[in-house]
Length: 252
Length: 223
Image 1: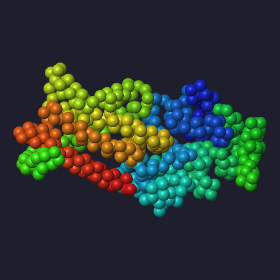
Image 2 (image 1 turned 90 degrees about the vertical axis):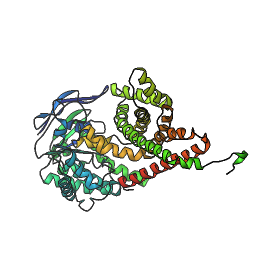
Image 3 (image 1 turned 60 degrees about the vertical axis):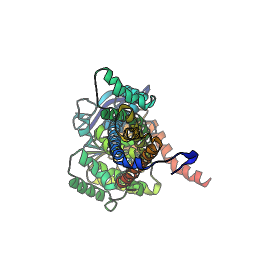
Image 4 (image 1 turned 120 degrees about the horizontal axis):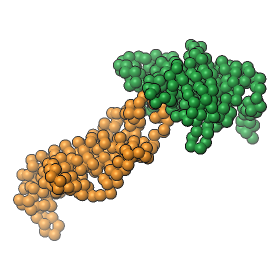
């Protein structure tokens, strides 16, 4: 279980998170939605300790992420994260990308790590791409590679940070498909997304973040289809209008 | 053979001293490779420290870089040979040349590496840290391999520059290639012939280093 209590975070004088409370239960998929700058990506980076916090606490399976006594590297292997910009290691083949952390962090032998990597590449549908360099893969394939790389550490939780935002529209589907697969296998997931449709279909709960606070939280039906707060309604109206604007500007 | 202005070239005396010159060349190659490796190992953490922009490690590396890049290499050699001698720390000329060339290499390489590190997206470090790798593990397995690819040409050039700097060994009595040449020519004063041959040997060593490092590059980076 991930328990986030009263988390505060500032970059210099800019306060990004103003006391966030959120609990993610085992096996749950929670989507974080909200406008750019609402703090959702920052919150995700705080959960696995990539960003320090100025107040509050985040507990992962009862272990405090930001406690200096915590072995953060050990804790991080429980928390897979996938970024917007794939961040594949460009000097390594797909198989080596996935095998690296099991070998270096989990101290598996080279052969065991490679076998493990192959298994996870197949899991995300890249079984035949093991020898390819990231530069030879499409954006969608690179993003699935990043998912396989995180899965190879056999995490209990997966964090997704706008993983489809940098992709060409026709490549979004394959990545979402992989995420649905993980969900169906019972993975606990926290997903930052602008894809309202994905949130509606797949999320157990949706949290709408606004100006560094959880403005509204509940099932997709509650938050997306019947939002109570005015900010949520405004945000969703803007999001829904977006596709239309794109059509208009491409016609004009 | 008669050159321009009636200079009489006299090559056979150089030929006779060739074993001496080659022994000197071997010392040059040894120091070059050792100083290249030592300089690299020192420059890697120093480049990371320089990138931090604060802290004692940053200040230490900044001083090193400033001193090594803004004073003559001869001065640096004298510092380690005569300077330490003044404090009754006497080190052999071989060690003095090795230390001073390593010192100089490390300073230049730090700045070359820092430029390379700046070219690598910050998210590469986030990505490797997020997999549970420690900071040193991330640098060794993810960051440095990419950095070397970026800075390769400048890096090899610095290695060759370090090789040329070993020639100051002549001034502290080391029989590396220049020292050996100096010694051999002092019997005949056929300075021009001797140093022409020596220059050719330096050139060949430089080309050898360049060729072998390019070969290594292709093997490592599969390109």
